[in-house]
Image (cartoon, rainbow, N blue to C red; front, side, top):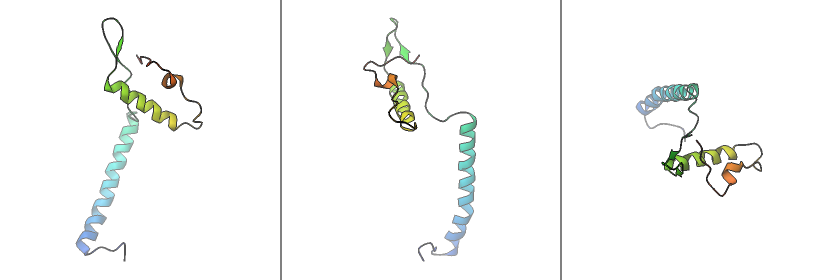
Length: 92
């Protein structure tokens, strides 16, 4: 009784929309991987006239993305040196 619907209209609406939603989400996932859009990659930092890097929100997102990539590694003890450094290294 937990998986039952109140009326046949809601059941048929669910049966009609569920495959359509799944097909659309699958096509979006395939096209995302086809264009290699598997994460944020802001690899160009903002630099002033003297060559010093100006920190932006893109740098924060890039470092967070690097941290998430590290957590998906097989061995978590291999922490990359660019994240463990005290100074922020310019990416580009």
